[in-house]
Length: 200
Image (cartoon, rainbow, N blue to C red):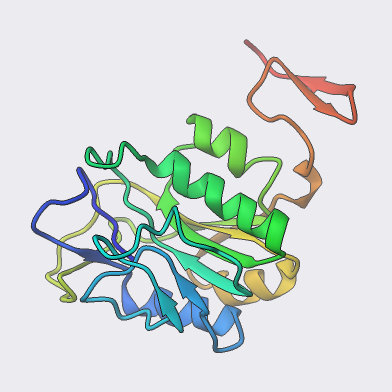
């Protein structure tokens, strides 16, 4: 559940605010089976938690039914990993293991990881209303807000459930009509057929 705002490994551990942990748990009918980005201050309390240095969440199995991911947002210089690697793993867990996955990430729709693993892959996104989302610092709410907009991304099969739970927190957008499209490229293709073009 670590969410290093700048560089992973700094002195502070960043966590998801309780209201969002509760919403994720409600969306998953009470059970979060895996938190691959945990830390000693975690309030997620998933059945299985991976945290550095003992467990690298990107190397461990994600073969679980429900997964909540609050990934490091910055570069992990020790392991050479970025948020791109975490979103790739989210998409893969849903596609390969039929996992229901929710990830709390910065809104960065122009980035490669949104184009590759959110648009055309995820089921829905909730653009959170919080002006400055207050991540927990070492398990405490110290009143400081994040400098970026954030969103909950959902890879799963129950859009209605996700929408019902998260609509109080932000604008929920159904992405299912984009499944299979290569969003962000010169042409969006489905089954080899060009459906529409984007301005270059």
